Image (cartoon, rainbow, N blue to C red; front, top):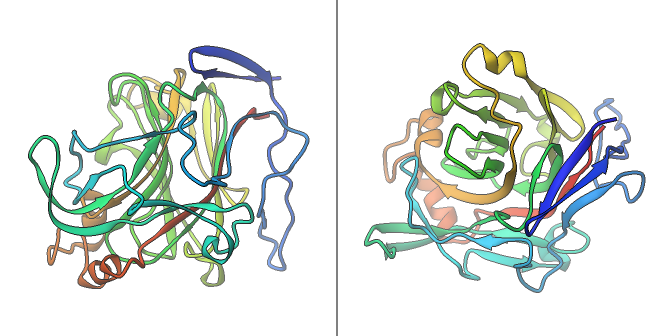
Length: 301
């Protein structure tokens, strides 16, 4: 039996591993996981964003001070970019959802004097919920738009990339796929290990999906809707550099706009780097969104 170590505000807990999901199959045979099972597993972190605001005992709101990847947005603490919705606005999230919505604010100036034309939200659990190993999952619904870059990921608490990065879900606005990746010493940035899952037309990224990773001492197994889409093992990373996934990490949810990853896919230079005119209009109209139903960490098998 494997165990998960979890630190909540400086305290470390160890839990026995139990099953994560209850699953069913649709007519095509694809796993149709919609909600987390209510029993038969040990939950060590959970937030279903039932509101009315962000639970600050679990999450921090990041404010832009460091700038990465030629992204176009500044991160701010504002209800204009992160809201908590319920009912029909939650679009099927039974207990409500976190709604990330980037905004167009030309000339927005950050505390360090940098100017941006977009604002958005990034939240993390650093120093509030950090853990080593376990199954990390979130139920997320996205919108289409070339140059959008929402993500759900896990980051080490020390120097990057030495302490590792696990990207459970990254999306650049092409609704037929999402990607998972890992980054560590000598396998980071463009040299990171990455894979995509292409969705069926009837269930693309604009529908609800559960994005997860089973993080174990010697492997990272990424699953979308319970189906394995990528496996990274310790010997795979050893070819490039040291295994960077045996240390505490924290959760991140963010919604970037433009930047290197979208540009590498779409090649768009105007009106903004990596961002199309159609997506710019959608952002202006408040139509570019990421809904997050819930986020969970549990002991894995």
